[in-house]
Structures are given as structure tokens and as C-alpha cells.
Amino acid sequence: PIYLDVNFKSLRARMSTGISINTNTWDNKKRNVSSKHHNFKLINNKLKSIEAGVNSFVYELKIKEQVINNDEFRNSILSIIKPQEYKR
Image (cartoon, rainbow, N blue to C red; front, top):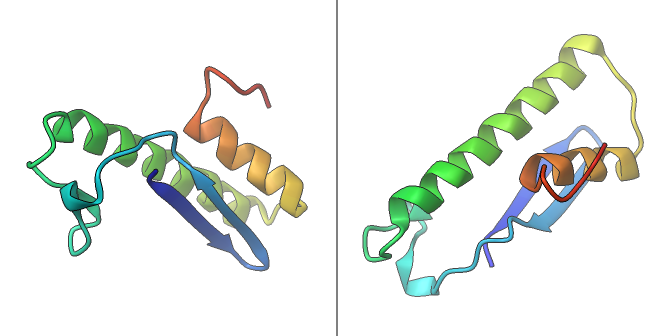
């Protein structure tokens, strides 16, 4: 599986994106799926979408100076990764 690591202040979340690929199709330098994978564009677009959602969420936390606990943090990240499966 491809994992997402998010750190903000003392909050930490490491969770699966729900996407699995063979390790030989992962480009460590670019941190994305290489063109060796037949669905690399689709997967990379999904990963970019997740990254954008997480960055937006963390930015909102900074701007609003919002205080949340680690469970709320993880649940919010999960709702970004799998919005159709998770309700905030």
C-alpha cells in the first residue's frame, strides 16, 4: 500500500491511501507512481488530490489556530483520503 504521513505540531497520522502498487513501480525520487504502472496517471492524480486536500486542511488549522486532538486530526485526514466512506 501507499501510505500517507502527516505531521502538524504534535499531531501525527500515518495511514494507507487505499492504493496498492508493486514497489518496482514507485519512484522514490519523484515520490509518485512511475510510468511502468499501467494506471500511473490515474493513481498520481488521486495522490495529488489527497495531498492538496491534506495541505488545505493543515493550512486551515494554522490560519484559524484551531486546536484539535490526535483522534480528530486522524479522522479529518481519513475523511480526505476516503470521503465516500467516511463522514466527519
